[in-house]
Image 1: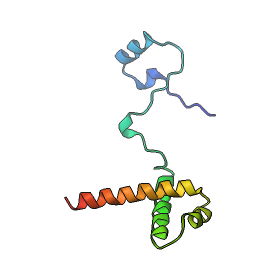
Image 2: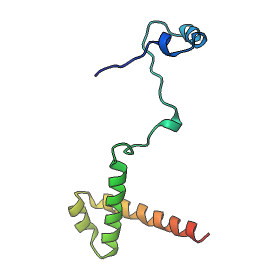
Image 3: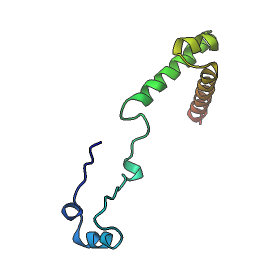
Image 4: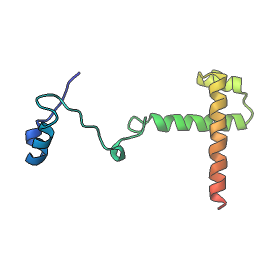
Length: 102
C-alpha cells in the first residue's frame, strides 16, 4: 500500500504546526475527512444506485405475482433477503405516499 503524506511544515500554518508538535513529533498522523465531505457507502462506485434499482425491480416483480422463492433464485439471494427487501420497499413507498399527501 502506497502511503501518500504531506509534510506539516508545507501545509500547516506555523502556529498550528507548533501546537501539534506539543502532542506528536516525527510520527505519521492521519487526519480524517470531515463528516460533511464523506461519501456514503457505495455512492462513488455506483453500487448504492445499482442495489436500489435491483430492489425496485424485485418489488415490482413481486407485485406482478412472482414468488419470493423465484425472486431469490433469479437474484441469487436468500428468501429472507427478498422478504427484507420487500418489507423495506413497502415501508419506503408508504412513507413517500404519506409525505406526498401532506
